[in-house]
Amino acid sequence: MFERTEEVKVLRDPVHSYIHVEYEVIWKLINSAWVQRMRRIRQLGGAFMVYHTADHTRFSHSLGVYEIVRRMVNEVPDLNRALNESEKITVMAAALLHDVGHGPYSHAFERVLNESHEVYTCRIIEEDPEISGILENAEEGLSHAVADVIRHQSANPLLPQLVSGQLDADRMDYLLRDAYFTGTTYGQFDLERILRTLRVSGEYLVVKESGVYAIENYVMARYHSYWQVYYHPDARSFECMLEKLFLRLKDLAETGQMPESIPAMRPLIEGNRLSLEEYYMLDEYACNYAFEVLTQCEDPIASDLAKRLLNRNLFACIDASEENRKRITERLYQEGYDPSYYLAKDDVGQRVYIPYRISEGNAIRVRLHGGEIRELSAASNIVASLVQGKTLRDDRIYFPKEIRDLL
Ligand code: CA
Image 1 (cartoon, rainbow, N blue to C red):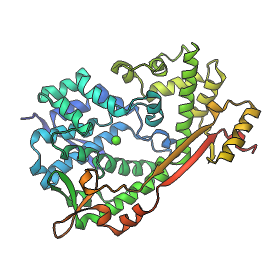
Image 2 (cartoon, rainbow, N blue to C red; image 1 turned 180 degrees about the vertical axis):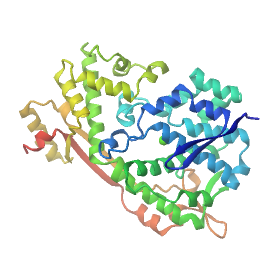
Image 3 (tube, rainbow, N blue to C red; image 1 turned 90 degrees about the vertical axis):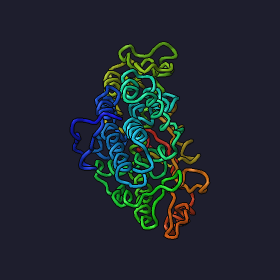
């Protein structure tokens, strides 16, 4: 038996109206240092440089993912029956903690880190004394059960599907939340309808055939959000510049010239495996402080890149053709810019929805009126035509605006 909160605690939320907390273990996790740290990490990396109100944090997103999972396990009758109380707590805690290992400006940062945020997430869940203590006090073995959801190794295969599959609470929350905070409408879809049409078939989450329209809408929301928000050239420009600044700091560190003034960054820049204590200190406050300090540092490249980041003097971009690359590299040399720090290549590609064979686990499954289970693209004409199209790609190179003006 898990201890309940004295009364249901509610937190106001613009996406879900309220986040409901009914268990002490969840309430304690929300109030832990690592979960509170997510208030200091924004959800959208560089996209806030495009959408000026997109300042929402991983903390609010994590509460949102938790709330969607909480509703799934309570309001989807099949799930409510299929899972016992311990499994419900496990998957709700995993939803709340699924992003706890993110670093600042996640994607650029992760490339510097050489280790994925999932690895840190699991380390925090299993090794941080506060988090693992809260979980183990609620039930012995709970910290490993929660980390197993993140690793997709749960004894019950339904649990990871709720948090991160193709039709999961993580995506559902970030699409809705990012749509709300960017002020765009691309990410919107009918969450209520999807929840109403979710069922369980064997070890899989499936959608009733009458829910297919809501699912199509969700797939389109993903498609549009990727191109309009996540892959927006200015958002990517910001992230490319961040990577270049990290690269410069790494190169300085190798020759013993790393600025003394940003000690919190040192373990990261020196490429050590970070202890959880060191990792905890690396949030966006630490990064932004480092940028400010670096504007004053002796190294002209680090100081210039830091100023550009703080003042949103973003790199321009152009198609990454061989000809463009040559032309811009030459011009950079002529103007005295080192292309290793002033020319960035970035490529992104996206399949709208990747259908998997129904035997392979990670598909959106639809249960037809007659009871037969089909993979989504076999049940939806719209999705079928989308997946026949080729992967959309967008390969660009980024470089200082003043060079573009000289071309
Ligand atoms: Ca997430």
